[in-house]
Image (cartoon, rainbow, N blue to C red; front, side):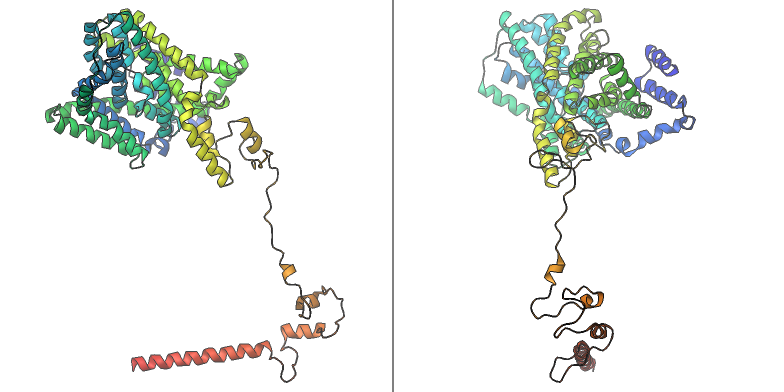
Length: 580
């Protein structure tokens, strides 16, 4: 109760989000029911462990923030708009489609919707009104465009989500392509409708202008190629790719385009690092708070309440409740903070219903896009109200048509999970094939197929896998007919006794004579040695041989020793000759 009261009071008085989260985490530990855990030092192990402090995302966030500020201060938005207009301006509603694609492209590079609204929106809003688009539609489109790039690579929210959820960010990039393009296509259809009904004039397509625009934007286009290319071929990790991108943008804007001077760098660096520092603090406190909730089994208690008390036991009902929760918390929190706080809570629920981690990621990020547009606390509403000098209440109504389109896209993505997983299916199949080759459970595939509470011990996702490998994934698998294997296969062993049986007149093993295992009986027959003779052969000097017979084993050994002594003397004589 004290923790909840603290959060409400400090959130209402406008305290920074990292301060609220830090105080919440400290109070949570200090008021723990277990006396041995009532120490503030419990914050540090969860913040400084390898999973957080050693994560490359901590370096990536400041670098991407720096890239965003550099591009917003340069004339990169103008070049992006010109190139988009050259390729898309001839379509019905062409300029509106330009706004959609230019905003999405710029957001993927900067990672922030607010930066996109200020940079790209400030250029396109006057142009849209001038071309004859309705003012309400133009402003609503600019606000929506601010967050369109959240699902497209190399989006910063996807990187942070991947770190928190423990999934491969390169696969998350692939998973976001189809949902991201789906939203852009749906908004483009609306733009075409507006363009046709309002009879907006269109530009004529010109291959010469397209080539010229493509040449102008070549340096900006090289940025995603550098990031995705270095990651794709394994040249760099995510933090190294971010460092390469930051150096690339700095050199291009400072020495090629010369949009930024050396005098601007201290101011840009200061502003970007202030924001990056706040994000890192939020991430640190959110990590500690999430660990406390896991220790207290808060997700499990909430899940039991949802399923037992509210009766939500079917997957489709859970998906609706899940999206309502994600939408509401996205309205109340900043995007990065929302990811850091909510994702650790949602993953245990998603694992119970065997929801794909990539499907969950796309739904979560799309809910963030919608929440940024939604009254009363949507982030894009605040930014647009400040930038275009419009009362915030007046923006509520004009945002509703765009929110409706985004909700329709969310409904499609929610009930067609293949849209989020089809591009990752090849990686899942490869992981299964590798596991089958090594005769082990396909744990890497399970990590990609459904959300896992314990990433160190992934569990089967499908009924077929649970049948073969058991509920805990510790089974023996299935045979070629799909029948579960109940006992491990025994390796065929070579029976050495068969190869050692005497054949014809060959003498048998002396041990048979000693221990009474001679198949012919206990009494020696024919030329077989007696038991006393066998014992003498092993422990004594062996039986006496007649003249002309082969010598005893000891005679051969003596001859070998004499031969070795002779060779040794010859070697010593040769060495004496060399040194003399």
